[in-house]
Amino acid sequence: MAAPTKLPGVDAAQDLLGFSLDEVARSMQVEYSTLYRWRNGRTPGAVYKDRLEHLEELANYLVHALGAAEARSWLDLPSYVFSGRTPREMLLEGRTEMVLGSVVTAERILRSLANNDAATEDQSLAATAAMSLVESDLKALVARMQTAESEEAVDRMFEARPRVRIP
Image 1: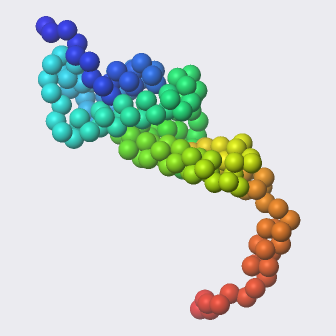
Image 2 (image 1 turned 60 degrees about the horizontal axis):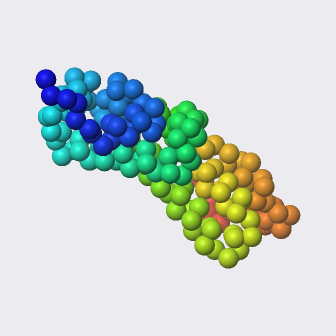
Image 3 (image 1 turned 90 degrees about the horizontal axis):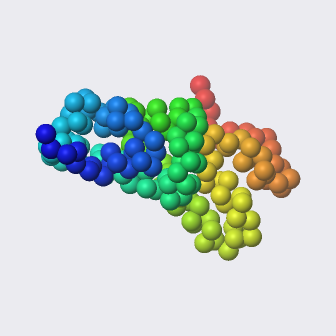
């Protein structure tokens, strides 16, 4: 029997995110035996190679942004973006691209806010805004961002009559 082959996404998920081989197989939407064959020299098909690459990219992204321990903890936090489900649950359903997309989007928002002159004065708000998209603290974020002026603007909007009649 051949020595186990390194598979980028598998090794990253195990080493960086603490996934078991069974969890990796579930996230890849394959049987454990298929994953075992890949580790022993069989070549995954193109679709599965893409999934492996996405899993590796996600693991590296999270560890780079949060550190290994924090990344592992984040996987088990319910997220507003995923309708209250955890990133781990999403991954185990094979939705790696969705989780990766939300993390990349949050990071891009954070970077965009950091590059904005107005946001550079308050980096903690920028960080909170970006991570709240991935976490479930939207109400708290909005409450912290509201000013008396913005509250008055919202009140005025709701005082105005709607322009469309609903039968």
